[in-house]
Length: 408
Ligand SMILES: Nc1nc2c(c(=O)[nH]1)N[C@H]1C(S)=C(S)[C@@H](COP(=O)(O)OP(=O)(O)OC[C@H]3O[C@@H](n4cnc5c(N)ncnc54)[C@H](O)[C@@H]3O)O[C@H]1N2
Ligand code: MOO
Image 1 (tube, rainbow, N blue to C red):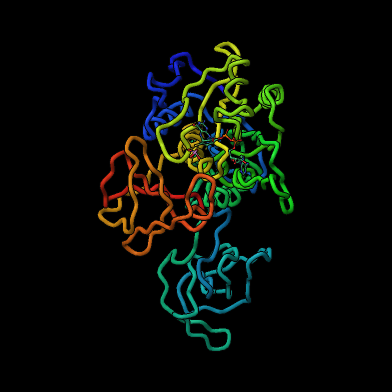
Image 2: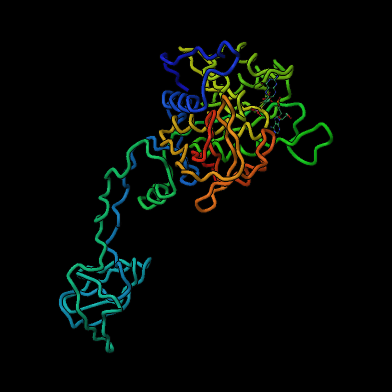
């Protein structure tokens, strides 16, 4: 993580004790910080593992595309004018040394190498064959994909910084790449809480960790990679050493311990480590105790810390508010959300918060946006049923609402 000196390190709360940043300001700040931090570690990854990264170098063609003259249709490769004499058959993947003289043809499959001397391919649909004699109308050059006509060997096909989508992976494979140099923010998670268990049925007083299982997919949707998740017990020293141990990451996500209780040690641990807290709470419901901080110094920058509240739905909102905009900023992804404006269509009873932005789980049903309920801070049932969170700014009267799409 590289931090530049011009970031406002003031953080803190306003005089009335409320978080200084609105929900929209917090998202914009996280994205901006991500842009300044840059795209994270450079790795050379096998193709399948490179998905979601951003190219660390221009992608160049290791071979021409196509890499040989190939038939684009099933039919006959023909040389010169017809009628032609059919000399045999060539199939894709079968090497051959056939050369055709004018007046000769071979039956050919799509993708097979067109013999030397053949000028075009006559599809079956246009061919008349009587024994070895073939007739039909061809246009010179038709239905042959010439070597290099799409891409010349050695040419630059994509610039550094391109997001590795499934199409980019397919293209890279077709141009003979086995691995790709990509940048990808490495994210480490610290899941804190004495009451948490990660398997089985909880006894009274114990709680299944519901945030840890969400993180890999959420981090990947922002272009990062979850390099590890640690469950730690509540404790000041434990939190300090968990943060210090994650120093090799671009981003450390701390789940829980974000509030003011006796077991909530995140803020104290950050102070102990000399962190700069840049987002100290956000004016939104749920999720207001979330935070964003830098570890390290100007000379030796450390990771960005994103603090998620322990209530799982509040944590999800904080991921969408701070973590994903941060990762998108780091990886140069477009900020696609808040998504689109849906006009006049939020149905059912929802009320805005007087001073904070409310995020409400909704389903999009045709042209209606329907709250699904079950979206209190501790409940993920609503988010699991929902397509999106409707963004209701303070004092919202509706019915228009902006939608923040939930990662799929
Ligand atoms: N005096 C105040 N108390 C609280 C405030 C406040 O402003 N003043 N904010 C409340 C809000 S809002 C939230 S959200 C929580 C945030 O708490 P923490 O981030 O400190 O998290 P914990 O106290 O550890 O846990 C809160 C709650 O969530 C459960 N939890 C924690 N981690 C997980 C997990 N990984 N999976 C499932 N559930 C988890 C935990 O058992 C608690 O029930 O603080 C309020 N209090
Ligand atoms: O804001 Mo808390 O983060 O309501 O659950």
